[in-house]
Length: 492
Ligand SMILES: Cc1cc2nc3c(=O)[nH]c(=O)nc-3n(C[C@H](O)[C@H](O)[C@H](O)COP(=O)(O)OP(=O)(O)OC[C@H]3O[C@@H](n4cnc5c(N)ncnc54)[C@H](O)[C@@H]3O)c2cc1C
Image 1 (cartoon, rainbow, N blue to C red):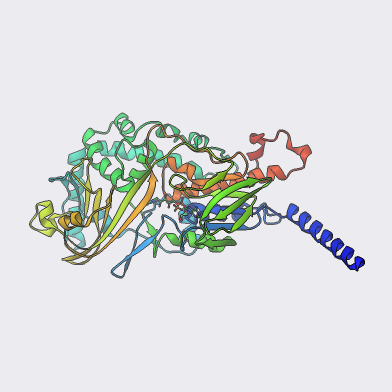
Image 2: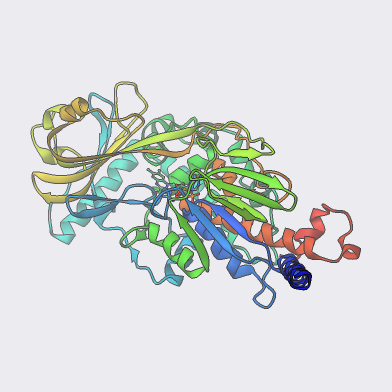
């Protein structure tokens, strides 16, 4: 009897030895919290930049608390039509997302006749500015109205408009540095360093209002048009930080686009193509570091272990329990309430007699008497039946909606923990939360919150992970000091 027992023990020992040596040499597992554009891009860039002959990362697991991927990229269906409910518009120079769209064979949806749509600035009592409406189908007449509107805008805001354009163009050009080749672009260890390198850091230290005043913009332009844009894009005023403000203004220019069928398909496609183990409906509740590993526990009590963890979601309103604890600067999230209404606006609310007097996009200025940030027409089903999208800082109660709309056939309300409340000077959380292998994509969101900004941060995080893993995998004699970061990043 003793021989078989000894034999089994020997087999077990051998097996354990093989298992241990295999697990020691096998590349580390990466766990990503969040399946938005940030988390999916990290997976994509880890696979893209990993050495195919000797991959630095092994399995990649993505955990998503919801039953669908995409996070703040989501769609809503109103009376059979699908619309973006979260991140909707992309800039023509958002090169990562543009590349994802091409790589995944998705279709770019060009802007419709949006640029010709009428626009007005509502102060709660009257429109302080309104462009002309063109309901004419004739192209030539539409063109004439469009030119007349440009003249009207110029008459109100003058040369300040060109100064605003220069300000935005300068910021966009600085942002383009993040697409420079890998040889000339460093791997960044913190957000401040990342922003200083591109020349954007100073914009985070002052408010948008201060920046625009220094750039020579008139008070009227800042308090009207600029305010309308920051309220629509970030639900905030011109006292937000200058960089987020510049990004917001860039998001109001021409040639904006989206992905046909929904921007969320970028996240879905990247996950599909990156050999990822996707855990839908699994919310990470706690994250503990032991030895060389992180133990992740879901709210359902399941445990997973990984050598590298990437947090690809804002931590500000989450209750994830970290052991040992982490320290990040306090940050508030701006809640944006997005309300979709199929129906008709109430003429008397705006003091008009004809529906054509109400602009297709109603923007608002900073005043306590206006309960919403904007209302825009998404689809005109007939002259008396439209689908509208409304942004507000607090939930639109039904009795208030009944004052603003004379007909409401369908109403959908979404409360987004949308983006950071931007303030100058911005303070940034670390990209590496624990000095080891716990990374935070959304630390960059204090610079600006856009789908592209998440992808830019994700690309840097992927490079940072690979460079740190490569450095650690070297033989001891080559290591030098344990955290000689200049050497560490020079190769990626
Ligand atoms: C109303 C609105 C309008 C916007 N408009 C635009 C726009 O026009 N253009 C633009 O570029 N950007 C826009 N944005 C911003 C843009 O959508 C975001 O910056 C971007 O989508 C953020 O992506 P992310 O992957 O970093 O985070 P998210 O998309 O928030 O992804 C995080 C994911 O993590 C999951 N998660 C959270 N906690 C856990 C956990 N404990 N365990 C597992 N999973 C977890 C969440 O469910 C979520 O799916 C808008 C945002 C909103 C809300």
